[in-house]
Length: 230
Image (cartoon, rainbow, N blue to C red; front, side, top):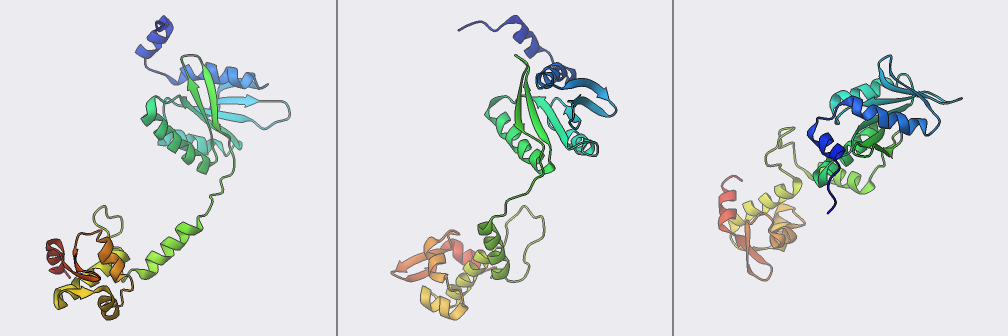
């Protein structure tokens, strides 16, 4: 195993500053034919190229709300706005970084990362107008759940148990079994209007049901407890 260069060790021991990002970013831009200057007006980095719009880069030692706010503010000057941060470390760092790339795309910001050990600049996305792709499947699922749910049983923003239409149907099955004893899925469906009664009891996600014979169900101990709240 080759030893870590002294410069790399020294860098690891020192805290990264925004100024550490400037030289690599400037060199990268100059390599593309830009003239680059720092701290022009409110912008950290401004780059100009013959006949083109100005390009702005905001430098930060990590993603933050302040960085995103600054990036969005610079869009009043030009559409070509990037944010630049040090390269991530480890898998967890990459997951967080990837999530921030998605957020920046939605804001129309470009994203650069700087690997300080060798001053490598990587482009993860360029500034562009964001047009979210709609999911027909997710839209249909949202509408189906909204229409199937009875009333509005949840407190908005809750992090507790959510009452879904599926759970409402399961509780209807529980209520019927509590009053009638072991019953078939067909009988419960006819009596309660829960067309998926058999499937709900067979899947038994809640642990409330117990199959006593083919097509016949009764309440488990957990189901008997749940029946007290129905």
